[in-house]
Image 1 (cartoon, rainbow, N blue to C red):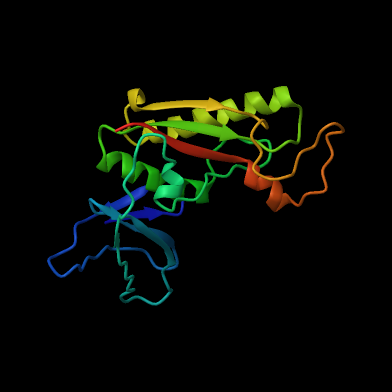
Image 2: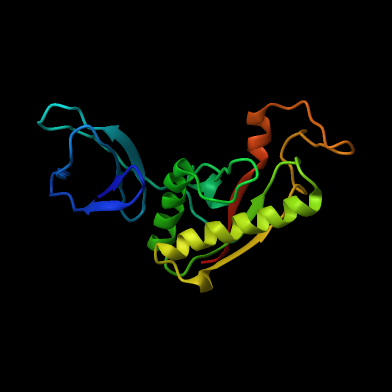
Length: 199
């Protein structure tokens, strides 16, 4: 069990007892995330806000056995139900909600120490193709850097930016660099994928 503050910094770690119970000391009126992991199970995480009144806050987490058998070429996101890692427009920094999903990738890598992955970063079509290619490369490297900062060896990670060359919907901007798509539709294209290259 891991306790994280709202900046996604680990502030507590513990192991459940034989009955699955655990406890953390927390501050009132603060927001935390509680993450549960177990080998051969899909990790689970919930975010809670501690009430103003002192007492006990109960957070129940039930893990499900991982039925997905990963093979080389699989996308970890699809296999383990992990969301794509989205980015803000024109940015390469890891968003808070993206860090929550990257933590799930981290769990898989920690549970499978010989696994290697290729991180493939994509942008939407806004900006020039050249600019988007460079931006996606920065995003791929940003994702790798986050995982390395959490203890994953660089030899297990590769990454490449694909710019706007692999849009997953019809939100292209060519030839006028204009699009009638919504922001949500464009965001679907600003993503990272995690392809298994070795087990």
